[in-house]
Length: 180
Image (cartoon, rainbow, N blue to C red; front, side, top):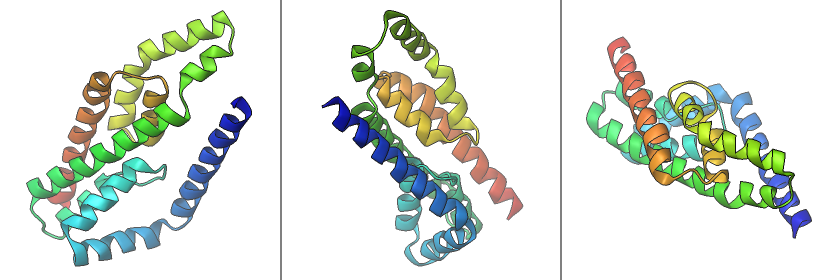
């Protein structure tokens, strides 16, 4: 069972790094596709790309489709609500992937007491990490996975991850709205 789980985790990370590499190497084309999709499908495309931004590890955040939608003159508050909904669903998806695929409880079963103590300290201080990832350009999805892996309480995940993420999205949308 342990070997099988190791293969699952390795396959998971390889898939995520492959997705990241594909997106990173095609950023211009993907931004153009997002832009074209938003012009055609409006709010549905905004929601879908916001979800994918926080469900898959890649260099684009949900503020990219939000900014594009605002630049196209779509209603700021409607776009904001749709982007936050998509981002939250993507974040919860990543949280639950982490809790099922990367669960630290399985690691603790096969580790030394000193390592277990360090994991618990990490878990207690992780609120700052998820907050910083939510408001900065740090890869947020990775922190969502880790939040699930350490079984961070959902309440803490919302307060320290999702609410700051919504504030960041609003600020970026406002800046884009001023520029355009």
